Image (cartoon, rainbow, N blue to C red):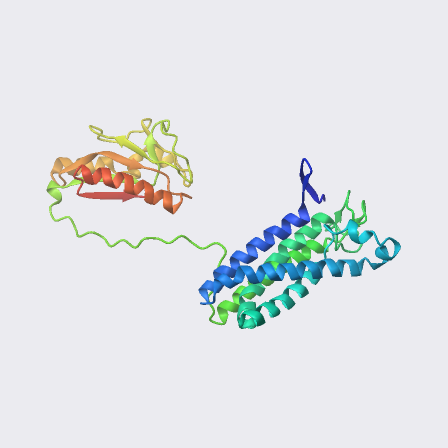
Length: 338
């Protein structure tokens, strides 16, 4: 493992520091979100965590020097040499809790309510911190002959070229599990569960009244099944689409093999390429047009791929071509998927 991940001029990005930073950001965002859900003052979360970090920083540094007291006795200059490196996570946790108590006392906040919101984030941040330990080589395990081992090649802390138990990774995994268990306990206790990955909200659109006179209605087609002209001239992506296509079917009676195909990457394209009417029923609507069961088929259809496409992108596509169809007097739209 290598703690120095990137060096740009005089600046070096260390794995330990990067993991600590990721853990702090993830923990802070999670705690703020959960505080808002529990009707607490979410604006207190960031300054509280900031002060806890300050207190935790000093305690983590102090505990590191305690663990390295022999080095300090041999060379007191060791303290100045390690001002920017060498911390003990458990010292940071102790210092953070004590600082949090003091902050709540000064701000007249109920410590345990805010601790209930913040402490799961500590487990989350600790999980990232232990990955940092692994990159730095500190907090290593005993020598082992197991295949589940790690051999450090250039570590300042761990013995190099020796198979060691990767206790840092075991600890990290348990910290993440601890975070998930705390979220589960909060849910079982009737407290709102909050996820770091909230799902997008979907509009609930009431259906329009039924079209009363289909015999004189203009019917349009649109699909997320990816039907496009052969060769996919607009290069619509097979997933996570960033665009849609508008295709003229004036005079087209049937979507024939070799002229039309699907760009969709989420299902077997064989049958859609063989007969694209299976996804977009142009042939059926042409028959209904001849029989007078509908007024006419709109001359354009709109197509994109739906798998993985962002909700905001889909809403943007729909708003654009819905405006076009509305301006052209379309009475109803048949929307097909895969």
